[in-house]
Length: 94
Image 1 (cartoon, one colour):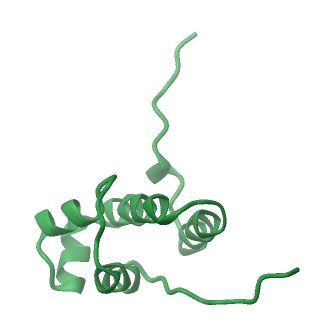
Image 2 (tube, rainbow, N blue to C red):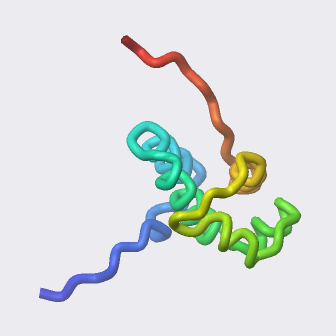
């Protein structure tokens, strides 16, 4: 049996899928998972394009969005805006 490598980028083909992916990570993951997810999305859209929109260099983006990194919140917000996302807060149901 032959298998292929899973690549989330194959599924991030619309704004709706990107939003669903981020919302799922926000609900089920932790801050490290969120950083990695944002990195996946940025790579899917194109790091050069994201770098231009954020005013950051590509190497800085790769470093900030790599597994185990601890980017500043401002960096996360810049990248979220560049990928067309935002954070919304809603009350947690009891």
